[in-house]
Image (cartoon, rainbow, N blue to C red; front, side, top):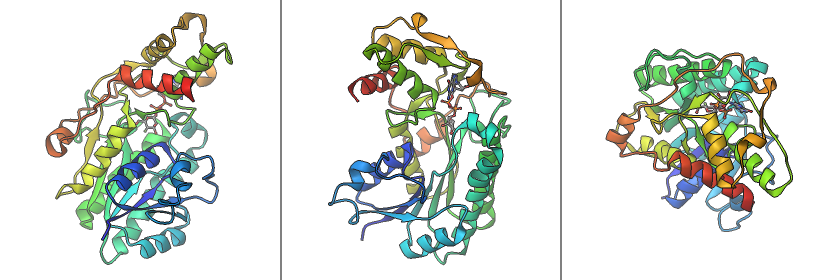
Amino acid sequence: MARKALVTGITGQDGSYLTELLLGKAYEVHGVVRRTSSLERSRLQPLYADPTTYGKRLFLHYADLDDPTTLRRVLMKVAPDEVYHLAGQSHVGLSFEIPESTCEMTAMGTLRLLEMLRDLPTPPRLFHAASSEIFGRPANAPQNEETPFNPVNPYGAAKAFAAQMVRIYREAHRLFAVNGILYNHESPRRGENFVTRKICRAAAAIRRGTQSELLLGDTSARRDWGHTQDYVLGMWLSLQHETAQDYVFASGVLHSVQDVVETAFQAVDLDWRAHVRQDARFMRPAEPLQLVGDPSRARRVLGWTASTSFEDLIRGMTLAELEG
Ligand code: G4F
């Protein structure tokens, strides 16, 4: 019988790549979608429109993390072997504007899910998408699974709470529950308000002549960026191992926003100096520092690596914009 996976946040960037990976491994995939999600325009549209997939191997269920009854019902009906919990408000800048709903969804939503899983007669394995933002301004770089949490924004604080709850439920209630501590992961399907996609889209639009300038916040900010396809493979691998533990998924290399700008503009043969301006509206009240991951546990235990280079990632995203 096909193994069954339930994915929260299935319509997002990570959810769509993970769904493709799981379908490729002959899973039956069930996705949780909010009533407000638009499937017509979502990243799942090709799978949703495919009559050999949707309703046969891919199923979508309306439920909400802040409406436990609906989610419990889906869990009982589907009885998944694995749950991938990817849902949540994922924009760090926005979390300063809407801290309460960010915490409600990301922190309390995860706790509610853990409570539901704990009550099931045979709890499924759980992957929780934690984030490098739990480290905020860390005491050491690179960070690993033992690095203390020190978030500097509401999103990071919500993720830190959720990640710690996953650890508590693993220890106290013996759930097979894993935190994937995910560093920034990007792709042509990245949301348009995240910095890599914003820059790659703008470089392509300026090349085409439909845009003239690009307004950015702090271009000296540095991040550890990789390709989402690698990171969803890590999610799956972490649930196949015989024991549950946390893993850092990262490239281990830092680049600045300025590096993204230069790589993207170079890919379309443009001089960034003629088009890029700083705009205070995109600056954040606090920036994390030195968020760079040490993925050696994932490499050693799971055989995982971030296989796409920064240059290939940004160039690929920019060229995809030109084609799209
Ligand atoms: O692309 P970003 O918005 O990603 P950020 O804040 O690092 O968060 C992403 O990665 C985290 C770690 O994996 C996830 F937990 C989180 O959910 C999300 O996926 O910003 C990257 C950097 C920041 O330092 C930001 O201040 O780019 C800087 N930046 C400069 N100008 C900008 C802009 N960010 C955005 N979104 N827009 C700008 O104009």
